[in-house]
Image (cartoon, rainbow, N blue to C red; front, side, top):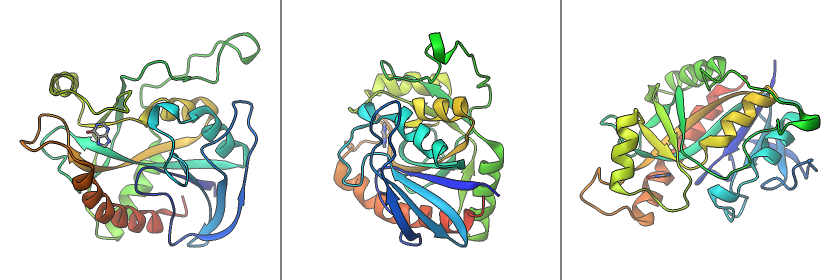
Length: 245
Ligand code: HPA
C-alpha cells in the first residue's frame, strides 16, 4: 500500500481528521516548498499533507514552487496524491458547491518552471500525458465519495490559467469552446511534474463560483468564501474515506 499525499488548496490548509505525528522541512534541489510537510495518519493510513499556498495562505498560484512541492512529496516516499483545488464552474453542471473529478487538462499558464527535465544532466524526456490523471486515485475518490453519500461529477476538463487575476468573459468563452469545464490556477504544472516524477496524481476540485460571464453577479471573495467553507467540509469527508489509497 502506498503513502498518500494530499495537497491542500485554498480553504484547505489543514485536515481535522489527520492525526499529526510531526512536521518536517524538506530541502529540495528546487528551493523551498510551500511549507513543512505534515506527517500523520488518517484511518490507519500514512498521510503526508502540504498546503499549496502555505499554511498562512500567502503564496499566490503563479509563485507556488510546484517543483519543490512535488519533489519533496516524492522524496519522502509518497506514491499517490490527491490534489484539492477550488475552481470556477464553466459548463452547466459545474455549479458552486459541486465536487468534480476532472479527467482532462488544458494548460493556459505561462512562464512557470514546469518540468524536471531541463536537458543537460537532467536529460531530455517527453512523458506521455494523454491521460493526465491517475485512474486508480480517481477511482478511490469516486468510491470514497459514494460511501460518504457525497455527489461528485466524474470527469471534466480542468483549464489551468495563469492568474492571479480572474479571467475575462471572452477568455472563459474561449476556454469553453476549447472544451474546458472548470477553471483554476494551480492544476498546471503540478499535474505535469507529478507525472514526470512518477506520482499517481488526481485532482479533487470544488467549484466555488461561476466563472466570468456565467452569472449576472460579479465574482466576490465573500461569496466564494461561503461556498468554500461548506464545500471543504465535503472534501474532508471524501478524503477521510479515501485512504487507504
Ligand atoms: N477562475 C480561476 N481560478 C479560480 C476560479 C475562477 O473563476 N475560482 C476559483 N479558482
